[in-house]
Image (tube, rainbow, N blue to C red; front, side, top):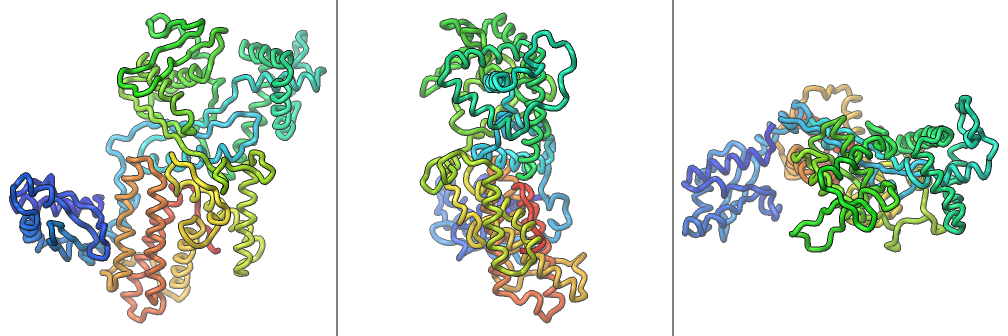
Length: 588
């Protein structure tokens, strides 16, 4: 289904050609003066030089050919050559009725769907999720849903940090605490216990303790490094401990990501790609891509057009150890072999940009990925407290994600209970839903690449550009539709009618922008623009609500038209919030 903007543009192109001008000038945009018109075309200004004619004369020529327009009720040429356009109310109603019946609300799916891999999440195992993990999870989940909505095959991969020095630290500390465990007995040949020798709580305490101790004691650090080496070399007992760590950690991660309504198709990590590294390294050497520099194996990735130095991509350290560059390249080897993606998107902290420049260039230069595979890095900014510094607990520590979500839920519960409209049990369930919306919308409404202030008071407000405000709008629509049905009417099969008032038409035009906005959000990978759109729709609805006696309307046909418009508005809003990764309750 073509967008409303497409349909208006097509009419403008026909008018330009009929008037003897090139259709390339017929670009239509939303009006920047909504008090004067709804859409505008500035093409006459651009055409003036080419045709050596006054822009106003060109605009008047165009307008003369728009008098029989099907989708416009008004086209006016104004000085110095703008063309102001208004949509025909009957045409707008017809467009919305077609949209309501169409699959995906009229959003066209990709004619040639792509396989897109999305790398997001990226937590380290054996550590609790904290606020630093929030943005990757929230942004990545929304992007996955948006790309999938357009008909693509999307594979979300959490890319766990599960294969490095932190594992050696945990093994070393566990041995210091429980040396009698069979994992540390070199002569043990039996089966290792199926139950892990630690709980998730103990595991999360072991790592920071070991890490802090290693910084102060060189001998302990060396032992942890050696344990890491033995693990990666296949030590039987250490591999069994590693498996326990993975089982306990991944189970806890799935629980916490589940609370966030974030899910992954793949739960792979650095350990999964170790088998690809030796062959990859040999290929880089054999084909002359890699060379030794001060003992380290590197691939040069600098380009003549670089404005600043781009260091070589380091494949192996001087001691032969692999690095993040190595495992990220090996991950690309695996992804090519198993999934053959058309595009891979990384949702990672923007401070890692240089790393991905090096990895992407190396992958392209060496043929690790096919030439036509698009590698995209989406770097996100920092989530800060009101002081402008990275968000912390009141005590100054890094806040666990589950504690942050609990705080938000409690804040929402207070506000919901203040209304005294629901019982405590329902209020708690609602607070969970609205609290998650507050967090996700608060994050996603900011452009991903920018830092933002995490303001609990503002994010949980029912007024302004917030998640709770959007949900309250949806719940208000649901309430009206329920009351309409309860009064003995049937809402099924109703048609939207020609708008009778400005606020009704404004809501219709906002709703009609849906498929156009989705295309923009998809092309630009910009969830914040989806947030801006639903805020506009919510505002347009609330203005219509306050200026219209919807259920009290005596004209049954007019009332039915209102109800049909509300049904579509609800569909649009609920589709959008699903793409953002949250849902609306039945009541608030």
